Length: 429
Length: 192
Image 1 (cartoon, each protein chain N blue to C red):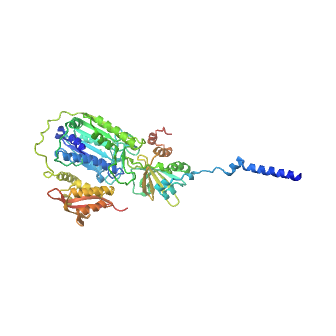
Image 2 (spheres, chains in turn green, cyan):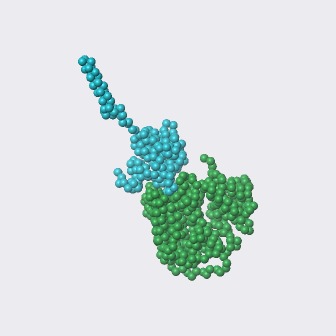
Image 3 (spheres, each protein chain N blue to C red):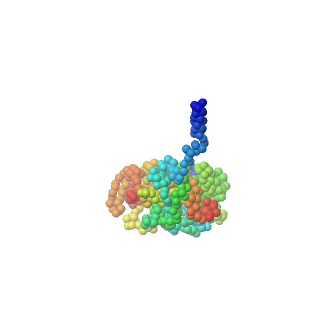
């Protein structure tokens, strides 16, 4: 973990980057049959970025990433996010897609279409979004450097029509961090001294990408489940010792590693060869970076993360025409909401749910915190319990599909003392 | 003298009868080759365990089967024109048991089912459906070639989804009827 931190911290702390922001969007279809591998992919990407951010003094530069998973992983939501997405010529944008993919037989692009659904959860040809469209949109937004990564199939489908359309939240940190100048140089060369775009995806035209998942559908998820390409991609960076690593070398090594992994895991019966397209040129000399403030790092107490996340949630609420009750919300921790949904999801293993629940209870809630559950009418309290009881109950729940936080109160230490939530259950068939 | 002659004749007759019983021609008459029909294609025990007795009984004793093209992207509310919820686009053919037996040969082998943890990252998108009418119940099996999965449909709903091996053979079986350009390309066959 230390090495991951060091690498990515060096990646993100480079001087030239300080003028712009690092913005990340992760779209993860955690409701698909690949959920186990995707959860690991997201965790790998998300956790690393979060840990790195916590290690850095980059509150101003590192924007909370946008994670579109579970029910938010749909085309409409992605379009909303991209429409409202803005960046400056100094920004770096990272886009990751983990999920199903396919291509039309008439697609000109080498890259697949993401198999997204509509808000009702249905596939149509129109809900498929080419990965290349995302790159084009992000490039048009004017970011200095755009990186688009897909870990999905690129297999051909005759029924698919050809098409020519939230970054993970990171917390600020105040830990001691001493960047490695060698790594800084390498990562600067990769991310800062380049401008343009890079696209990559897990497989060649007409071929599948593979995820390692449980042997039976509905099996328990473990960290041994992952997307082959995502795993190879990050691993290549982590094990790299070449101070002159280039994108070409990184992606070519990751591609070779993926091919090797696929052959080994399938006993030479399956092939998977990732592809990439590098369209970059040396960046124009960066303006002299603003000297870093010499003031001590901001501590979480002085500038806690939740308010930043709150702003993002509020923006979304405005977009989706909130009810008067929702308008009164404040201090809603969106990442807590995601964690609660993960704990409640019976698609996750009980082991994972229990472990996460314990961790949330310990890290997020104050000792005597209470949780109240509100009925659909928005007024009736149907349950009032301790946070411990609440977390235990939802970690064992079945068909509990969503939990939305309607009200949250925190103490001076940033710990949650009260939650008002609404639970949405799936009806029995 | 007369007695001696009779004795010799009896001995000759007995010897002849004994020799005849060892005649290879006589053995062939007794062990005629059995006539093997499609009913000999029956699932192994692992397949029965995987699919269940009822599904196996319906699947491996077909009188005929209907082959349909289904639309993976359309799931209309009107269930009269759907199989497993997917819109039926076209009734392509009625398959007689002798043609069907090729598919059943694959389906009867437990090695045709994929338990590998390597899962293709593409959604279940069925393109063909096979409807096997039985006495009391109709069984349907829908195939998603792109994700290498089949789904067992009973009472109008998908009962279970199964990943399969032998992807080329399954595709070839259907493409002999469909003559689809994309399948030709995937099979690397020139088509007909």
